[in-house]
Length: 247
Image 1: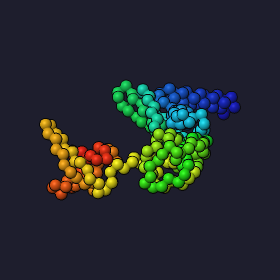
Image 2 (image 1 turned 180 degrees about the horizontal axis):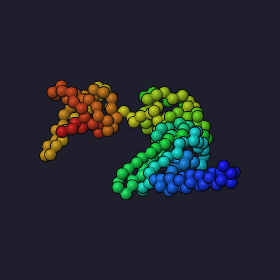
Image 3 (image 1 turned 60 degrees about the vertical axis):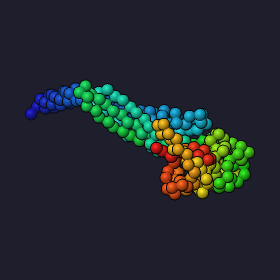
């Protein structure tokens, strides 16, 4: 076969294949493609919001590139939420969920997780002296310091109002940063304390003497014993002397 004819056949075959590929692409369904970079950008914006007032003092670093998300054509909606971690834990994992709804109302959802490392330091409450278990926190017991995130307990407290008046449930050493798990609402009732049992309903009010069967804080439901009937029941602590029994 002459060389010119062979070249012509080869060129024609190449053009035909190219046309076929173009037709295939033209007929392919339209999709939404969120690149790895775009997913990371969306998640970073959400993570910055989680840093709140400390955002200017902390830095977030992408731990690993997320996978891209591909969805069919339709109205696109993207939602972000905190999956794990916290500002004080030194890491955040953000969940990015993309949903596409086509003209027939069919939904398709794809999701990716994006992990960030959080570095820097932030203000934290520190115990001025040893805080003994069972004691109440006073303003003189606290000071505020800036410390690196990796040295902070989980849910480290920064506002004195979140600690003053609380009861220490885990001893805190002098100089130790204070976490929320070390404190609790103060107990206003102790087990064995005499209390007033209050039972109210439409058109009636009953008051009786009782005894607390366990410690309690305001708003907590505890067990109490009616001194007259010796019956044990549950009630909500109103104050250091009153337990409201539900009707």
